Length: 493
Image 1 (cartoon, rainbow, N blue to C red):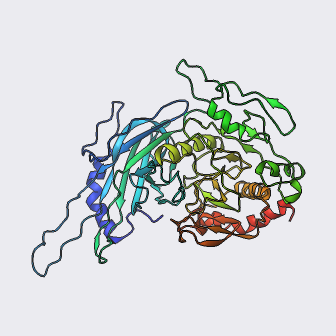
Image 2 (tube, rainbow, N blue to C red; image 1 turned 90 degrees about the vertical axis):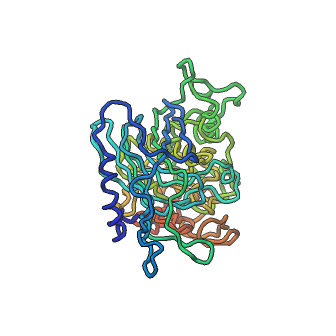
């Protein structure tokens, strides 16, 4: 992402905005925060804080105008003198105390409207009471999203959004969003108008909550609903009942991974190459003999293992026909997390995707943390061709793997890259795909290719191969060629 206010116009704008921005950062006391000085437009009503602990919460706060917004045109109407340009539109939120949160992102009303501008936040640590420096939030516009024409895309709940940013446990925030300096072309006659920000800008403050099933009103964990199915068997023929405290949604999500793991398992155990071939039957690809090149199954932490609140997502699972390709992503949420924090990061990403962006579930099929731990993403079964929302226009017949972090200028940890190779060797092997090969996907539109166009892709591709984006970051993207080779070797090719 370009640096904030990199142009000469941006520097001039910074000078004009320095006073209001400086005044918006007072030392905060323990008293309740004051309301913003400038009211939000009626089109963006305030949203309540969504249900809390242990499932987490989301605070949604409107961003209001900051700094000079009037057009500077003292020479207007004087022959021979041009009108001075309008300063870039700026919105934000003055420093204020809020309920605790750990992840931030900015959303707006129309998912089809791009945000041409710069987003920055700074937060106050709940542990040390110190403010962070201003941090850039990546303005990835619509590149991770459901495909056009799908029910998930047409739900009416989708919003435009930035990438989420993990900031750790915080209790105060300040935000500024500035439109890019200059003008943008209009649809009629190529005329230009000042760049504007999307309508309905809001800051989303996400608390991941604690891991575990939500509490019932009486304070007791809710059990599995009656009629949720008979006890399921594992891959050795053993049966198991739902774990105590499992909700109906948890039972369904866990059942989708049987017989890879018993119902209620927090992880799916690793298997060697010979034993993992049996997973192909569960994937629906026919006999084991038809798919001989399957890598060892890596250990996978299930949704129950990382504490997914199954009441957030839509109930049904949606599948595609097969898995032809794997798209590698980074979450662009920053690298400032410990491996022990990864489940909380995932719970925050999940809430952001569903509550803030309006998706049916977390967008990625899998996630991998900096220590190389593999996590189940979208519900429906890790061995099955679950339709995700990771690479707009190419979600059908593919899977999305997100490495937690930002790898534009920071190299990905070796453990994470190794796990990408291991995961693809197993999952692509279930569908008889050679990681070194190419395949053909049909574009669903909304990306670099027209809807319906057949596009040749690497079986292991980066997000940027199908969309104009930096994802998965240059330094992770550069690791994909050796990853393809390693993945194929793990399959025995």
